[in-house]
Image (cartoon, rainbow, N blue to C red; front, side, top):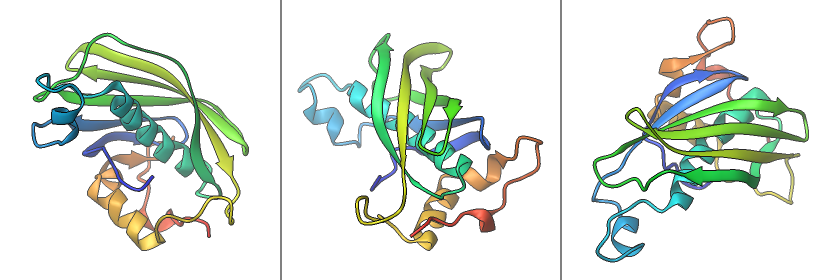
Length: 170
């Protein structure tokens, strides 16, 4: 991941679930190019938001020991298109987790309306030459700070997650 499409996290429970928010604004270039004359968020970007939310949950669950890559989007469906003014809420939950991969159930809503759902499969790749490191630990932690993850992140027992535990493997 080279950029974050998320605005902030509202919930983050290690190894279990997370909720992130994305406010859709007219300032976003893709809204003007995707369907000229109709400002809508492509569902591929809704999937990107779900995958980013889930990917951060999964990489944290495996203590940043491996690189987490989206391997497959399973069954997915969308009820309607998100448009400027909508606030997308991405909710994800880990269904299966192993050293080699994970499965995450993901939903997007706008207000109280279900917008989309997907099953996401992630591969966990050992650090090395096959998947280059995209950012330093300092940069990654700064992004997590900006997303507000440390304001809401909790262990499964409810204790706060601290910033010093995040270190991306080389």
